[in-house]
Length: 177
Image (cartoon, rainbow, N blue to C red):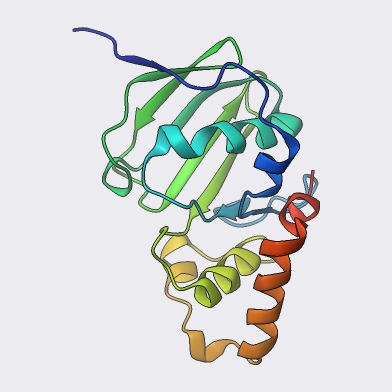
């Protein structure tokens, strides 16, 4: 069996790349529910989306060793990537659709994130991401992705908040690190 490795950016991603992440995490000391936050990638190519995500999550987890992902959520992905001089194993997992789990260097340190599909309507995605990162939310990924846009009490507020998030770099401040 041959091992496929892809090298992605060998340099530390710039602050603006991390700031462009559409990511929210629950506070580190509050880990209730199935997911510890949510991520809304811009595309379905995992190796394109991972550099900034890994850089941001390394602030909480330390060096990243392994990522598990739902194989059908992403385009073809190699078995390993080289990121910041570290070989990161990419393991498909058919049991957890719409999630990605990132494992840190210390045993037991990992984050499971809801992955909001890239094609999701921006208002729905914003609502789902913020709900998943809510301190007391214990919803399953299926429940989170099934949130009806009609449950948003103020859609106009959600659109303004999303616009502010995208234009002011608020995502970096909100990742809860």
